Image 1 (spheres, rainbow, N blue to C red):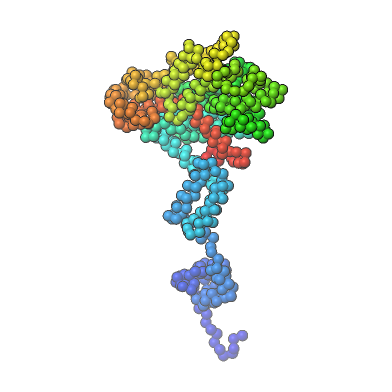
Image 2 (cartoon, rainbow, N blue to C red):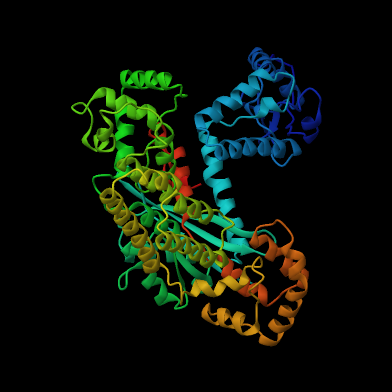
Length: 599
C-alpha cells in the first residue's frame, strides 16, 4: 500500500526508439515489434518498453538468460557462413570449379561416387586454400549439375547451331537405332550438320526409352523430339539407321513415314553395315567356317587357366611370344578381321596345342582345320600350306578389303562426296580378283602344292565368295543411278570433276533447296579461282569447304554444300553412343535413370 501522506509516483508512457537499433550495446540483438514491444534475437523472447523505456532494454541485457544466450551465439557460427554468398565473384568461382569437375568426370566416364570422393579429398588435402574449403559437390549435386545444367546446355547449343526458331535454318540429317539395356530398349537421336565455321558436326539431341520398336512408334518419337526442340521437319535432309526393314521397308517403315512429312528426304543407308554383311555372310563353305573357328578357339582358352598354361608351353617350344586369342562380335563391324589376323599370328602354336591334344578332345570345327596334319611334323607352314589353311589365309585377305573400307567410312570426316569413290574402288578390287583369280599371296603359294581337284574346289568356293560380295554391293548401292553419285562433284580432291551451274542446280532441286541461279554462277566462278589453293592443304574435305566458302563469301552455294555434307555415309556416331552408354551404364551403376544417362 501507498504510505499515508506520500503522493503516488506518476508513470509516463514510453515507446520504442529507433536509435536503439544503431546503439552499440543493443543493435546486434534488439528488434522492433511495435511502439511498445521489442524482441531479442538471442533469447528469441519479447519484452515491453512501454513503462521503462531504455531501462527495460538495459534490464533485459543484464538478465542472466540473455547473457547465456549471447555467449552461445558468439561461440557458434551461423549455418550461412558455410555457404558462399550469392551473386559474388567468390560464388561464381566456386560454381565454375564444381561444374568443371563434374564435366571432367562425365567426359572421362567417372562414377558420381568417385567425383564425390575426389572433391572431399581435395578439400581435405589442400588446407591453405580458402576457396577449396567452400567446394561441396557430392554425388547428388553432381548428378543434378549433369542433368539440369550440362545436358540441357549441350542440347541448347545444338539447337542454336541448327537455327532453332530463327529464320536462318541449317539442314541436318537425323539418325537413330535401338539397343537393349537389360529388358529396356533405348533409342538415341543424333543429328549431323555442316557448320560454316567448323565443318561437319555430329551431336546427340535426345536419348529415350521406347518399349515399342514399330515404325510408327519410332517415327513419331523422332518427329516429337524435333518439334519439341523448335526444329523444323522441313530442314531434315536425310534419315540414317541400320538397314533393317523397320527402318527402310518399302511400305511400313520409318523412312516412308518421314517421307510423308517431307518427300525429298534422302535414304542414307549405313554402308558400314552393308560392307560388314558382305564380308561376314558371303562364306558358304560350312566345313571351313573361319568365323566359327575363331569363336571356338577363343572359347577353348577364355575360361581355363590350365589350358592357357599349356598353350604358353607351346609358344615357348616354338620360340614365339605369347599373345591372347581374341573373339569377334557378330554385329561389330571391325572385330572379325583383327580376330582372324591374331589367329594367323598365333596359328603355329595353336595348331601344335590341338595336335598334341588329339582328335577326341578337340572340337570338330577346329579339327577340320588341322586334322590333315596330325601325322606330319609341325615345321615351316609357309612353304606348304594345307587346304584348310588356304581357306584361313583367303578369308583374312578377303576381310582386309572390307576392313580397310569400313575403317574409312566410319570416320567423322568421311562425307557423302566420298562414298561413290569408295564403293567403286572396293567393287573394282573384287572384280579384278575375280578376273585374275587372285586370292592373296599366301594362298597362291599354298595352291601350288595341292592336287588339281583340291585347287579347283577351293577356287570355286573363293570365286563364289567374291561374286556374292559384288552382287550384295550392287543390291544396296546403285552404282549407276544413286543420288549419292551426284555428290562426287563436291569432292575438291578430284581434279577430273568440276562443279557446274547445271549440276549444282540439279542437286539443289533434288534436295528441295531453292537457289538463285544467277548468284550461283558468280560464286562458282570464284570457286574455280580458289580451288587450286584449297586443294594443296591437308585439311579434311569438309574443312576445305569451310575455307573455300569463307574465301568466296558464299550466300547461295553454302546452302547446297550444307545439305550435301549433312548426309552421312554410316551410322557410326549412333554406334559410338551405344558404346558410351555401355561404359557409363554398367551393372555396377544400374540405378541410373535414363534421363541421367542421356545428359
